[in-house]
Length: 286
Length: 179
Image (cartoon, rainbow over all chains, first blue to last red; front, side, top):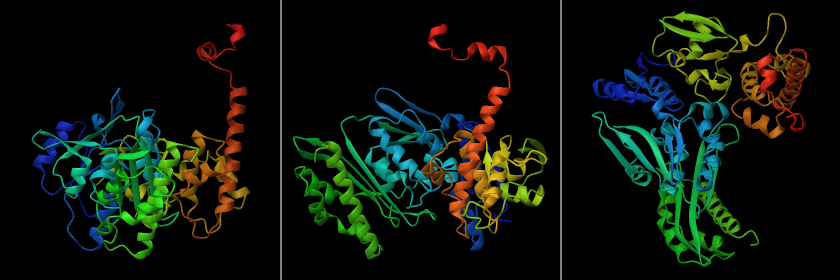
């Protein structure tokens, strides 16, 4: 027996799920299961008490929709990673999501894991947080009493991804002017644990970086912005040497959190490479 | 009672909420072709197909796949005739200890059913969740590629030998000159 006994619920509507969530004690929400089930197994091995009830959100169709209008992309929280990867809506600044999805773990995991699970599992090694902060996404929650709440991805992860509500969907504004780059380093080609990810967004105005966002995820802390680096880039011209120079302007407090030297070096390599890509994509002749 | 559809066969089961699909397949139904190894979603030996897509049965609750089409390695051969993937794995010596092979084949099947002519990169990508401790990857990848060719041939042969239904024939795309 891999898991401790539990009662499984599979509501077919959000309202039913919210009612269950409100009324059941010791409950966990099940999205794709790739994080939760492994966690429950680990807790069992360590003889730590596990929740008695699991509510699967899988049969709730309203949480699975991906749609886009002129301005906004909406991703249902139960959208499977591979479904997002294959979505025809990933154009303009949303195309970076395809790169992110493609690099998540392994094929079976990408067939199971969901966007909502990736964002709300409170596991610091996940991939979506950095890109969602970078794209200035809003997370839409529904409370057990039916009250809705919208919170920016940045604020959500600043509060360590704590919530007692159900994430229903994510919205991202379309942005044709931004230039984006994403880097991710994994532990090995096969045991796919992301060690770090870097997301950089900027706008080039008169040969200068403006409104730059640099978001990093370093596996021991939730994704966060490196505002020191952002400030440096925002005062800088777009020149060939700027990527190297930027490495002297990192917020060291972010990168030193329990990370070993080689990981700090990987951050430097990834950030430099991402900035170089931004410059290259702005003007291929560079 | 819950109904699981496994290899096109319906099973009425009294499932417990905590039972994984892997446990149900092996312990309740005796379908031991699906292997159990790491039990924490890292090795891919427990791969089965759900609605044509590869998933890991060790992190899937059996209750959560009620009514969905599950295919295991036992569902591939048709009586005495092996699936082209199984045949290719034999023909190309892709099996060493064999423990990872059911998972490899199920992951490969999900790929080839959609794309029987994958590139080497596409095969690598589709099988990236399946580990082989024997390190027999080159022959495994070759077998998958060859199986794809066989499946493509079979598909083409079927299209030639099986006459189209009238409605299909009428709706088939015609060359512009005949319109």
